Image (cartoon, rainbow, N blue to C red; front, top):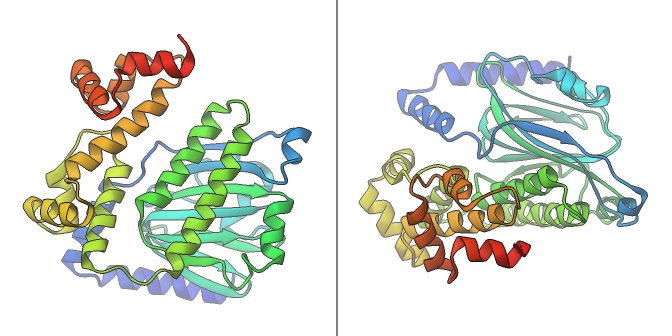
Length: 327
């Protein structure tokens, strides 16, 4: 094992041991919001027609790795080429991995990086790399793999480079949202899903690059961005504004004030907005009823959900379903 990796892991461990109580409370809060979806993984088949696009999504997934679990969990569920990620591997494709909880290391090209929540790792084809969470913390990861002539040109043109493979973007609902949209396409595999998934991958890459270059946000922006992230992470649950305020370290009234000043919406209005948007996607599926969509979005009362949906879209959920799928 590379001695620099061992030293970094030991340093990270001792830093964790010496943290004060406020850091521990912050960690506990992060565990409470880890992950917008249940853990899953997909390795995708593709056709000659798909390859003509010059862009392919090869794998996508998320995993909530608990403390004390050897990485990667469920190792045999991955193809043999992908399994030795904690010891060192070389892939014939790109991967982008987003960490939202926990700590770990990423080693590639002779450099070792400390991975914290809000970091993005870029894996380049043909280059040996290692990444893994600390055993003491585990982590929540979201990943997508991709390949094709178009992505290779990004490497040739310098958009990607071996010197620029680690991004400290911070926690943002926009990045998490792109991953969740990719997961939706991968799960459904509807016609032209490869085309739509690759479009989302390009948007994800652009968002990461933009976030990494952007100046550090001011206090209001940080609070609003974090609040949006927490709401996006828990979009399938009931609204818990006091819980979000507690995790941000401010009062509920202060959060309402900051959020409305910065966005012209209250946190509740924003949360309902993203819930209804997600519900629109659910109702596009033939096997999902209005009642099931309401339940999946965290509404116990189907009729309250229907009233909100119509108020926001101008049509009832049943009429929306008839319009988009023709039933």
